[in-house]
Every structure is written in structure tokens, then in C-alpha cells.
Image 1 (cartoon, rainbow over the protein chains, first blue to last red):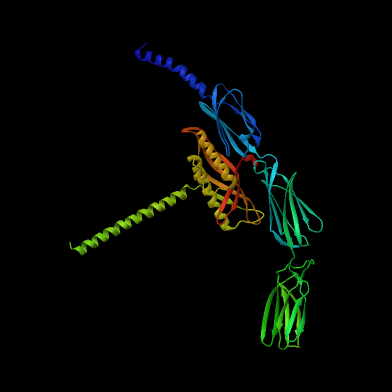
Image 2 (cartoon, chains in turn brown, orange):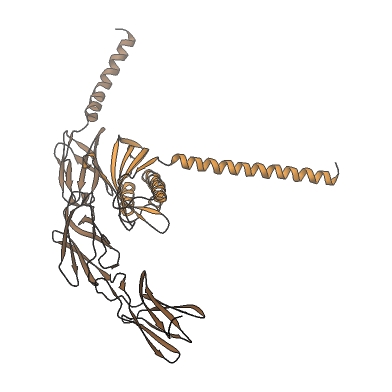
Length: 293
Length: 185
């Protein structure tokens, strides 16, 4: 054997066990873990092999690094998987192997309920929007379809129910306002979890306006009857009623708010005059004073 | 050379230096802006069939810009380990979770490098009152995981996220960002 061959044989003899040991260490542990896990539930990961290794668990809001012993079950605690999302488990022993699992939200436990608008006219189609976001106890969005029951309870009249399924954690409905003014309680419920919101239904546009005039010398007092919408609800105080007087001097208009359901004003008159009344887009009757203009 | 001529020469030299300085600043700023623009991940938005409210053009532009900035900031934060570098695009649960994640990365010595190859956003819900928008993002990401300086994992597969965005006074925010498996949709 030459000197060079001897040297090669000596190096192989020295490096052999080292190479073997490296090959053993580099063998990636085979990970077995569930595809999906419910949030807040512990589980175990099986990893083949033997000896010590490093386990990494990387989630949306959590990073773990533990030294573990291969060949048994590696326990993942409930607190490690509170947040829904995709997690990655990596085991390194020389080389590394990784696998993914998904943590899904647990049972619905919280609802975020938005009702819009806070005041709505009566008898208006699709005027109320209700939107519900469904969350579990850890405030993860529950993305699996969930049935939401909406119940609309007006101050008077029958309750109305609607049932909708969530899509990606959200359910929404458009609803008609009912015909009577007053508070409406809208409840969204998923199982035993519910949330209630209250909106105010107010009278719609005036259905008609009628006024009477009472003359006293050169002053005329104009007063409307109770101003109502077409469902019979009195228009709220503050709604503007416009009175317009035309006489030989021209036209003058007075805008006055409704108080306790009626509106009134006074004009000075010095000859024939015509007075009209309007509320929103509704024109009322005409009154002629002291003959024709 | 007389004094006047000398002064003119000095003024000319000063002007030349000043112009060169301005040029240099302009070029630097332009380069920075371009670099910043180049470093922002590409985001596309599909809002067809969005319900119950259609998206406004300005809103779509703002959403794209905000989401792109959010991912740029997210990648920087996860790699650098500085939670204070997380941009103002994140609020609520999204921000809380990312800050926790970065803090735990720092404790364990783990960090993540994201090579962002773009996002395809699909808007799926926009509330009638305009206060919330839900989107699904299909992101082309290469994610490298390090323990210290040692690369322990590389993944280059599409990722899918369910995103909830809400408007503020003059901008939109990412309020929730949840990764889901491809099978979810």
C-alpha cells in the first residue's frame, strides 16, 4: 500500500463513525399531527425517532421552542392554540422537518351586532340593516356557517323573525320598518348567545296638512290640525311646516316647527290675502281672507 | 481678477454647489420613493359581486394602498423583531396578535423572513353603512424561518387569509388577519 493509500484509509477510519453519526442526526423526524384543531383544545404531535430534538410551534400570535424527546407524543397545551389560524410545527434534530395544522374557532360565544340606522321612518322597505359578526370565546371569527336568528319586536304589533346563515363569520339582513312609531327591539341570536339593539321608528312624511285661520282685526292666526303620516303617526316635534301668504304687497313665508303635533303662526293683513301651507313635499289647503286678491 | 469678478465667481460656485446639492437631494428622495414603491408588495383587488354595498373607486384605491403597506410593515416587523415597527395599518385584534407574536419570536430567538410575491384580494362583504369590509387574500409568499442565523424551514406555497378592514377618519385599517387553509374556500 502506498503512503497516499494509507493516509486515505486512516482518514476513512477516523471519519466513518462521524459520518454515520451525522447521517443518524440528519434523519428528519416524521411528524404526525391533526389537520385541524379546535381553538383552546390541547392535542399531541407524534414524532418518530429517538433522542433529543427541538420543537418549534409557530402560530398567529404564539411562538414556542422546546427541547423534546422523540419517539413519543409531544403535548401541545390548550393555551398554545387559543388563536385561530394556521400553525407550523417544526422539529429539528440535525435537520428539520415541518408540518402545518389549522386551529379553527370553537363554539360561538360572542356576537358583534350592528344595527343601522338608529332612527328610521315607519313603513320604509329595506330601511334597517342588521349585521352580525360571530366570535368564539377567544374572539376568533367563527368562519364555519352558523345560523343566526333575527327577531324584530316593535312597540306595537306582531314580532317578525328572520333566519340567516353566516358566510365567513358574517350574517346580514335588510328589514322593513313597521308601520307604528316607537322603539323597535332587534335581537340577533346564535344558540344561547344573543344581543339586542334598539332603534327608534319615527313618523314618515306628512300625509296631508290642513290649517284653519282665525282673524282678529289686522292679525290672522293660522294653526294646523294634528300633522300625521299616512300610517296615522303624529309627526315629531321640530318638523318644519311652511306657511306662505300672498297679498298686494307680495309674498311672505314663515317656516315654523311643529310643537305637540301642530304648527301655528300669525300674519298681519291689510287687505285680501291668500295663505297656503306645506310640510315637506306635501301641500295643504288654501285659505282666502277678506275676499279675492 | 478684481474683487467684483471674484465675488461673481464665488457666487457662481456657490450656486453650482447648491444646485448640485439640490440635485443630489432630489435624486436621493426620488430613489428612496422609488425604492419604497418597489418594496411594496403588489396587490390586486377583485370587488365583483360585492354585497350588500358596491365599492367606491376611491375606497378601492385606499384599500389596495393600505393592504400593501400593511404587508410591507408586517414582513419588516417579523424579520427585524421590532414590534414598534409594525405600521399603523394594523389595529385591534390584528395588531395585538402580531405584537404578541413578535415578542415571542424575540424571546425564542426565532424570526421569519417573508419574500412577498403578491396578493390577490377578493372583496366579499362591504357593510351597507360602509363600516366594515371583509376580503379573502390569496398571497404568494416564500416564508423562511430562522432560529438565530440558522435557516430551519422554507415554505413557498400560496397562503390564504381572511381579512377584516374598517375605515378610520381618513384611512382604512386591518382589524383582523386570519390565515386559513386552502380548503376553507
